[in-house]
Length: 447
Ligand SMILES: [Zn+2]
Image 1: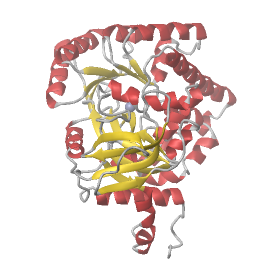
Image 2 (image 1 turned 120 degrees about the vertical axis):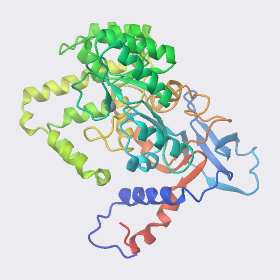
Image 3 (image 1 turned 180 degrees about the vertical axis):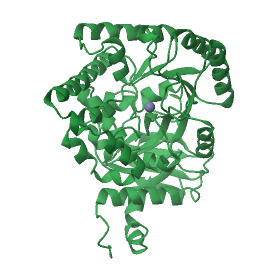
Image 4 (image 1 turned 90 degrees about the vertical axis):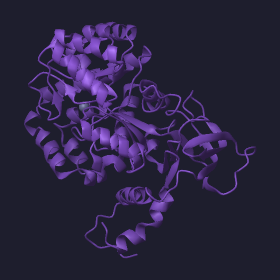
């Protein structure tokens, strides 16, 4: 095999790049009517902490139609068979906090993500959602909020800025009419405008997700029934300031428990903020997956690294903040508050797709078992989306969004990276297919 010298030879990169090529090229060729059968696979159904060993799973027209022991289930005729021996099948992962770019869609799929929740969208995202749903382009299922609703001094380009309660009612109504899945609230809203927003959203039957506007405060958004709080950092800043009082942490988790709010902690991003005053973070920016990062984004990340902040006292401050967020996450988990895995990609150091594995690792670092960490990216996410009868678990009748892993993720959460193939809407994209294309790709000089 001829490999040009100027190409960095890294198996991970090669595989993932090819994975993307295969994903893109097979999009139009694969028929949705084929059946697919995985035999002898260990299924992690995510309905409770268990493994169903040596199972056969039959997929037809994008749905799981049969699951049972391989010794019993008959393999249908004219089916594509996948050998699942010694491998593990989990539901497709969901990244519940992304800022999506069309160019990144396949990076999510290549990392086992079959659903994303986009948290600042405009009409181009509605079009993207439609194209993916109709199979015109390949990508994870998209759920999207409309333009975030904020005060005037928000830095993001996509936003809606209401000046009065009447204004905000109009914005909510029009976002619902346009077909967005959520209303995203952001910083800088007054109490009056926030409550008008909530009232209208309830009338329009659309969930409100997002930040904690300062004037409203944590208690205010909990009482109002906001469906999710993004970033545990926001809870700490709103409720604790810089006094990390553990007695108060118990109190806040009890308060959240009384509401029906889910929390999307985005811990891995906070780990990056903590690390960005260390050489360790700059080293991280050399990781193989960084080749997939847009040069402008990389420039932005590098501009946020703060060598000038590298003083012991500041380092301690960042570290204490991050550690407190880990502790609070565990407390919320212990109180059975639904947690959602979200990355906030492409914020600091969060590579689209790849970063979900960092978030899962952080949730385990916070004290969740690998099983419960997986729940945040599967069954909890599906429940939040009101789609738990379709996605987020492995069961007959559900949509076949699945990830085949070489190693057991319940033993070590980093095994979610040992991806052998992904099934999205019943279509199979294998690693073998990818590897068989390696020679072709390099001799054609596509890379
Ligand atoms: Zn965000």
